[in-house]
Image 1 (spheres, rainbow, N blue to C red):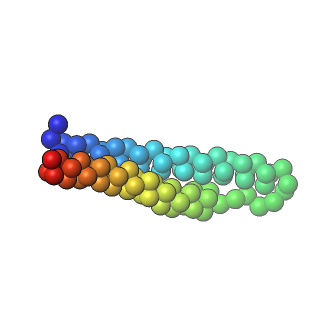
Image 2 (cartoon, one colour):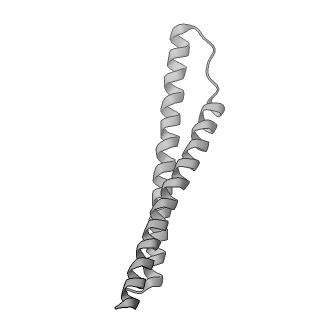
Image 3 (cartoon, one colour):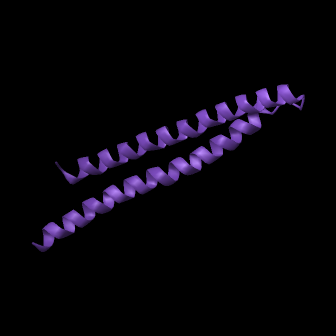
Length: 90
């Protein structure tokens, strides 16, 4: 398999990982909002603002997803570089 194809596959894996982590955080935000809403209704407190809860979780999700996807992609590309350098020395 050529190096270029492998690099694209690592990048594709990074995109998939980014989407997975972002979706995880957004779904946690939806669950958090539901929990806060039920707690507010039971206690008689003010209803939470869905926009604030989702924005906070969306921001955290984008940060975490970018971190993990970057680590995966750069680790893959680094591994390819190390393997290529090892072949050149042999």
